[in-house]
Image (cartoon, rainbow, N blue to C red; front, side, top):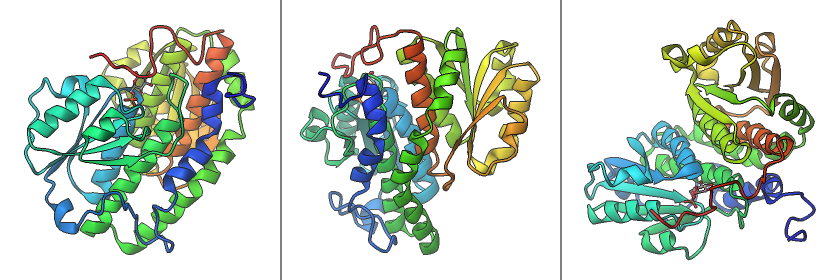
Length: 369
Ligand code: G6P
């Protein structure tokens, strides 16, 4: 097993550091040389086919569900098709409105999760076209779906998903841009700009992962707190959800993610002196609003650990600590912003002496409903 860990102490840490390669492999040959379009040979869809979708459902569990939430953002923003995201174990019990103009995208690292499989079968029964986004070639979900796009993350062993998540985000982005290309909903110049920036993501991931020392310090300093909050707006909120799940899964700390603007409707009551709040502020379009939410928690003497894009000179004025990630388009920055959160949960679990790769009560793949 030590050999399989490639010199890392745990599979999770190894998999975190494999992300530049996993993302590069997932992107490989899927962007046209001149960055003008996304190429998904496995789909070969036409404009008519994409335009026939009146609605898209994205259905998944756990981390894959969080990737789906980002996927909704990508598809709606780029391709302008309405998307709903559902937790697989809820989906088929709520009588979803589906017909043959519906596309159901299921996201599953393992391709074996029972709830996700059952949800896909239900969507199929009601007439939806099905598309699986999975990491395992020939998995049950890959075989059952009408079409498949593979994430090229390589085997993921640690229960807490890391490289599967980032590669799922990549596929969701590619899918959004692919559909946008067919529908003409993104201007050619903007498409080139986005795909050019997408190509830089693997090396920006490497750069982000080099800076682990401050995260180890936070893990030691705050690792024994009983509660941690994560806040953010827009895509920062979706990343906050994933960051809080990671912390719960492996460090057993009670972690909650809140849309920053929703704090004042209840959660603010829980923010007291010394409570750590991880505040993501990478989304430029809602930056000022996020900042005012950060001021709200600071006014209650919370300890704020900010996550910001390089070049941000404001956040340091209000946060106790700031972790910077390289700058890129706000649509792509979740791919970088999630990395310090993965590392924070890893080093927090280490501080607490938890079994990182095999957390209590959890399984890598849940094949019972
Ligand atoms: C389990 C794992 C999670 C994973 C979820 C969905 O709960 O512990 O890490 O996100 O299943 O798994 P899937 O293989 O369908 O992505």
